[in-house]
Figure (cartoon, rainbow over the protein chains, first blue to last red):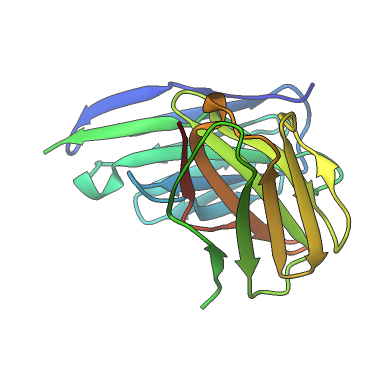
Length: 111
Length: 112
């Protein structure tokens, strides 16, 4: 079946270091979304990428969608303690009805 | 402000009980989803509905059923609760053809 692999599963960084999480899909996606879940919270939408090779920025966060629309990455520059949480990617196959979720990357930031 | 509301934040039920988890959204979204979240396993789709009275099985539907009699409400039913259904349950809604999914606050169900 369709799968989205996400790595790493965990990442522990010092405050100020950069962080990247990667997603790879077994099939071509029509779009990919990124969500953040704070500890004890629920997933909250961050962004959606649609176009091949698309790059979007939100302050210290940079999101990329691969040329083949099968992989994506989220990069955080100079992490802060407020970045702590689990970051999920979720891809839409062609019919756009349901999302295929990665397992998430849990980010811990040492102050 | 958009809202997805789950009926309970915490729930404790006995093995064999029939359990109802309710989810209501106020955004007139066509699509609604039920997930369970367990450590290391991410979000696993149980059932989803793309319109009133429509439902489709997700990846792990065994032991669950759903009901969508009204557009705003999507109910998850555990016919006979078992201890392996102890989990965090998340409801989400999304506009058909739309972008983001909106999640409820989650229901942490413990089956004893």
